[in-house]
Length: 157
Image (cartoon, rainbow, N blue to C red; front, side, top):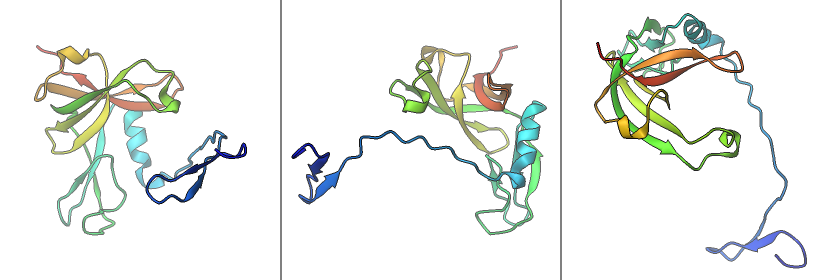
């Protein structure tokens, strides 16, 4: 910085760059009328996805239109909620908006219905997780009253 201004030199081009020192809070408002049924399903303990009857593609999270072929006639279906853990990672360095949370695990599960789900992994320690292990995806009411879904190890009979 020169002369008290927040200006630095770009290491690649040598051009001056302005660094703003103010924090910005963003709030997103997204229309969800085309997938409102998904959120209603979570309240009922159901994990819903969509399928395109034209090309057969399946989508989770659900899509109101098929991004593969452009059809606007998707079908809703309830997933089994059961599948296998494909991958996971422990998040130690968090974005500011998640800094209040202790370290957490994010995983990817492939459900038996053929859809992939990325979500927080609950009720498990990192050392107990294995790729290929059976998992369930369940909805749960959050502290703020909204519903979300989580990956959890399947309960052995």
